[in-house]
Image 1 (cartoon, rainbow, N blue to C red):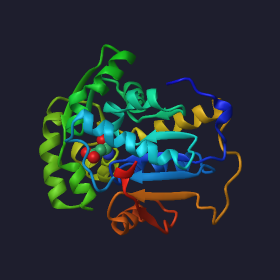
Image 2: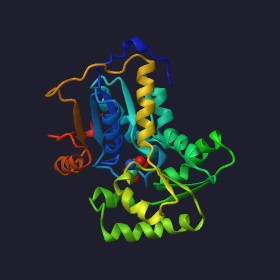
Image 3: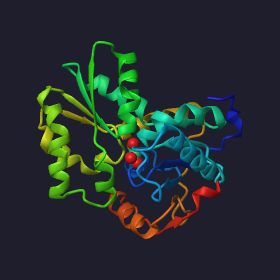
Image 4: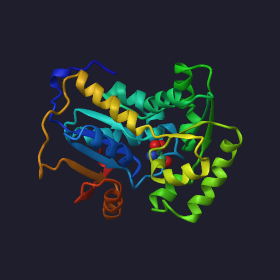
Length: 280
Ligand code: DGL
């Protein structure tokens, strides 16, 4: 991270959270649960989703635009609630901005390495995240004796963005994707895309009780809280009703996003606004 002046960060400033679409809401939901006093500005790049099939350059360019947009709200920190952007763009973003920024991959890797008992961990994620080998890198740094099996699941994100969370089509595709992981006896499966917790029940049913599903959102929110405490910028007072505590922005389809968000987050989300992200 570049040199930062923490005294410039205000505890009542919002936290910026972003993803390619609705997936990051699974992380936002966890932040709301663990640190309920915080304000959140969420951006979902619904016009350009999925990120998982795009190149490093494109993902980095998109992520930089979003960070510039979030900074217009003078956010005190940014959570990259997208594994693909965490894998490809986080290092560059860290170098560019002078506020703390955290991703979801490191926290997920940490949890999985603590959870496994047989040392066989599966990771399901986008093509880009699997291709980056980032989970393998971080998990091996924590425990070099584990074996990691990555499986790209490119159809999950579009199915989830279409709302097919509990649908025979998703079920069938999940069976195909997961069959090779079942055959190799993993005991831990990382949901390495923030969209996947939305089909957690399907994934859990197919993998069976002997496999622990790891959702990096929990650990990400925990690490975020810890970091805010360390820097003395955890919001101590609840912003109060009507204070626009949670604001949502997308690059397309605000109405559709709003109804998804309301089924994921139980705070009665009143609005989501469309903005032109290409302007940033
Ligand atoms: N939710 C994202 C992730 O965690 C990206 C999915 C996509 O846009 O392909 O990787």
